[in-house]
Image 1 (tube, helix red, strand yellow):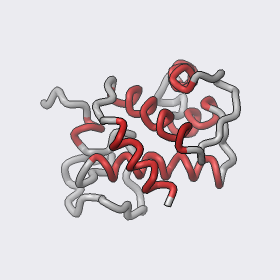
Image 2 (tube, one colour):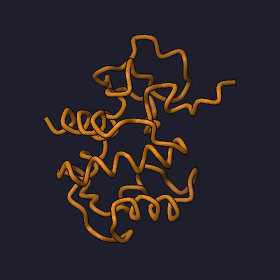
Image 3 (tube, one colour):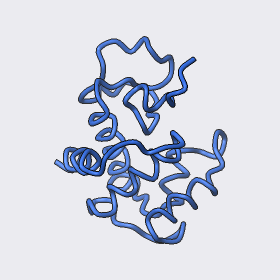
Length: 138
């Protein structure tokens, strides 16, 4: 068994579940993981993470760390309160404070905080996160 976290190994640091969505950069062979999407490179997994967060904000009107994390990591599988607290701390806001997810200066650290929590590490350089956020906002 690899010591590299699953999300990092799959180039899917948000641990996005596989569904009918055909993500840009999704690996043709998805057999490496029975549950989560496998991407060809980290850029695409980070972009997908940012895209999901933008959908939460734009479509579902989720605009606080608590609301976002409650949907991203439901309490049935996660300590959502602690997770939202870590995300809020990384953003310098309260769990219930409204944030502008469409602002790259907010979305990039939000992505980084989720990567950190999902994987126990955040190994990606800032320029890669910024590029993925830019691609998601296009």
